[in-house]
Length: 267
Image (cartoon, rainbow, N blue to C red):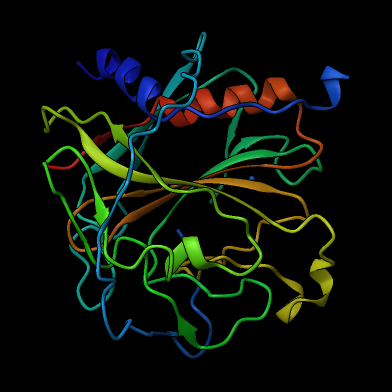
């Protein structure tokens, strides 16, 4: 059943691999926990997020299925996305680290996948304070059951992060054996400024959001992040697929295939 659903997820969570060099991107909170600043009012009109219509990734060839158990299921007093586990398929040559799953981890040509639970995002990943912006899904609806509408787009969350050139959001479907129609997610593509000297950022790190076990600081100048905010109960699950300026086109295609292979069991 799970293997059959992999194809559905791959079709839904596609991404485009740009030209690369061979063709010519569960987390300790800071000492003081950041505060999520809620917006005072909603927009007059809800933004209905269009369905993703980009190219479909190739299925993972000769892959190995791995399972990621929800480390915060049932947690009290903190964000805790309500799902049981995820499964994803890795091609040969990929590795599973403590936080990041990927190829050439820590190298200039890295491609990586990671899963995060967080209360919100930093308005400016380079110049951070104790005030977080809520997630883009903080106030949302399902106008027809098969789509997502956002009350504050593009005024908060990833869509409003400073200098990230966020794409307009799109909805994708994560295959789920417990949900006939799968689980909806909102997809963004974001960049890190190519001319940014990350050493000049606060604490010498660029962090899109805080986490719980390790900081989200695996960014380099010019990096692209494909981020899925998965619409599960209690708090969204954040999935980050990242690649760097020196990542090869083949490795980016593999990253897209891994992202597309994700299956979620919510119940």
